[in-house]
Length: 393
Ligand code: 3PG
Image (cartoon, rainbow, N blue to C red):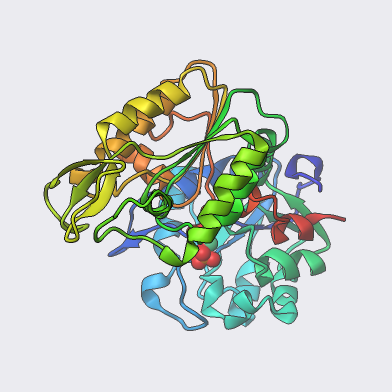
């Protein structure tokens, strides 16, 4: 793979696939982390004398034009961050876009409209990719968050563009996550939270091949508790996955890795409850009308002990329903423990990890926080990501 700093960009039209799939409500951007993360590549390309054409998807419009999923608010925000105008195209392909692109000169920045307004994007359509590739001299992929999608902008554009490269964000994600995968410093502790065992089986197994300790938290832990016969009340469980959960524990044993499950749970009547109903220790039963929504104080102390002295930490997903203040303590304290570690490589990614750190006021406190959700998970699982494959010569 060639990286952007190995390319001659002077006077070139550079088409950059970014991931500006950011939360937008009523035209206001909620979290601009992904936009910020693209700036090093954009600034570098501008300094080199390139013309920038940016493309991204936003949400899931499924091939229809949906005004609320327009990238216009992103153009305005990006203009502020870059301190220069960002032109907004009415579409991403077609005559009008072509003439806008023809009128650009070095230093100009044009943002194309949501790629997923065309169903060909998600279908990985070759002709659609070719039309986009025709807009540029060089294609650059810097959309790590979308790297696991074999969509046209990830695979078909690089197949047709005269030249192709990876941007600095892709490079950084590759290096940091790759380092944790390849030669982690020990002790290596991974934390896997989130709701479902089913969506995490791949990553759990992959992590167990490397880690010394795996902390399983969040609703996912509930399913593991069933194995010991604990009654989980109304908690989210995947009773059909008991065999899989047992297989994870057996695999851990085989690999000599320790699996840490919660010692106690904060329970509540529903995910929207405004206060907790109490704490239930592992081994005691949760009443039928209550559900486990956070880990309890004993578990947090166990996390502190397990994490002390860790040299590599990978954190994937909160350990409770942190969005609700009544059930946020476990995850927020975990964020404090991880970010307080001395001399450790700490990597976060996947789902809500970033949002949880933000809630704890620790947004920039890990060594590295991935911009990827699904892509982070698949990368950690050791899967080959279509975006990287498409950049190979
Ligand atoms: C993400 O937010 O994970 C990426 O932008 C990919 O979006 P998608 O899950 O809609 O493909």
